[in-house]
Image 1 (tube, rainbow, N blue to C red):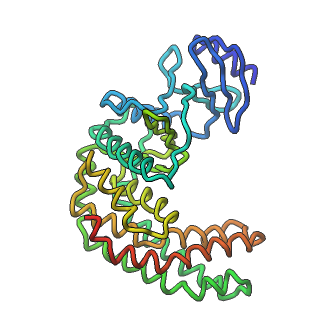
Image 2: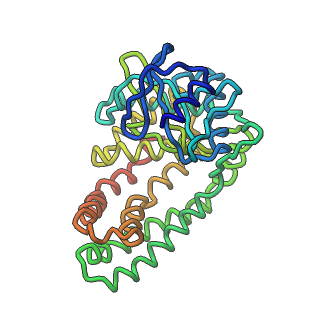
Image 3: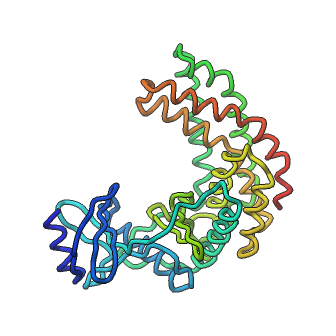
Length: 328
């Protein structure tokens, strides 16, 4: 790494006093404070899109983010040692506690503010935008096809996971099939066209470890997956992650929606898409897909436990969906 440290000193005009490895990055001590040097698999064109998105948010008043530090010639990345690196300020804070209602409320307002500040984003020249708009029906149908194929695989198996999956597959498949039908008869495509005009983007990984909390502020980090998408995608994932910690208690979701709407609007049509996303058996698909397609069958016990969690959620999820109108 000595070569890249020399490049940091040269390209960023930054004096490095020490470099300490931590997790998958280095913490650099410099006269202007601690910095994070992170190796990334992202292409430079993708980094330009993310950098442009962050700077757009910053200019629109959403300043609590992990901005890239640019080189002296204006690049938000550094290529060296057959790898690409990014440099950021080291930010203080604890991971957001999704078991704490106060932090959940703060996080919901943070998400709403980010979505609002994202409006009007035009990617910089030479960047590679990620656009997920309009793809949800395709993803639903593709995942349903995968579940159907995996059902055939399970019928040839003789393990506990296979038997559990086969016992409940029809219930979850019907849920997904219903969601796929509902989205085709919704105003999903009209919402997509609206967002194309407004230029709104999503964080796409809004979870506890990407939200740093201090007493006076929250900071949103790791925009690696940010993309053009309906804002209800982020809201749905946020709610889903919280619901799995509280047996799908509708009252906890009401807090998230109430706090979000105190900062940003959610239309009636968006609420319907939100409901459809939450109905789709995403966790079931993810668990069975990983088990059968990622050579994880050797770890059957852990996957049986994951599948058991999905199955045990059934009555709580059903009750939540029955009460969904309380959120609107």
